[in-house]
Length: 85
Figure 1 (cartoon, helix red, strand yellow):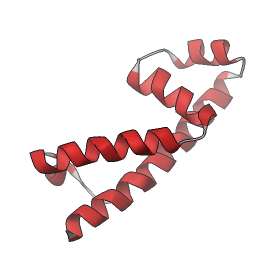
Figure 2: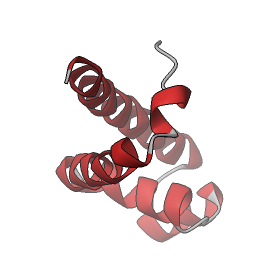
Figure 3: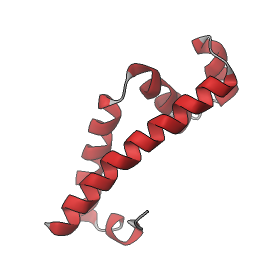
Figure 4: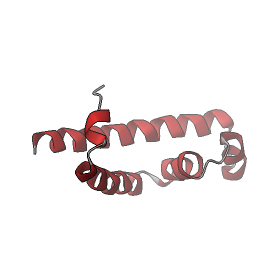
């Protein structure tokens, strides 16, 4: 996995990265998007998310993991393109 920390500090990249992240989140399947927004953005506990969605805690964690992998792949593509530009 590439280290993007240096590039992310660049203010020019931050705006574009935020836009890319928002687009990547919007393109996630609804079941994955809900978990990411509730847990990673809003800070809701995973156990509470599982209860509210009517799924097991293990399922909630699995969905979050898969969503993060999808986001990582999208952002990796974005950062690769940004490095070339």
